[in-house]
Image (tube, rainbow, N blue to C red; front, top):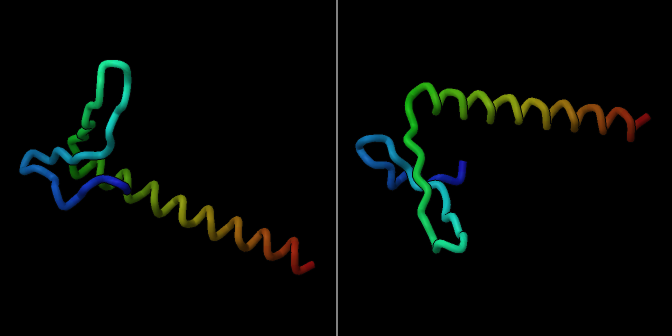
Length: 64
């Protein structure tokens, strides 16, 4: 979600984060594929549904 999508290379590599350690700073890239992007989309949709379920259950408890 926090990747720099607008900077994705033609090979599908996208910058996702900086890694800091005693060796210095390294940029971390991930190569996305159609399958991996579909998995990310599924995860986002599943997570949204879980938030909606939580909100409904919370409302039922607080409203009773």
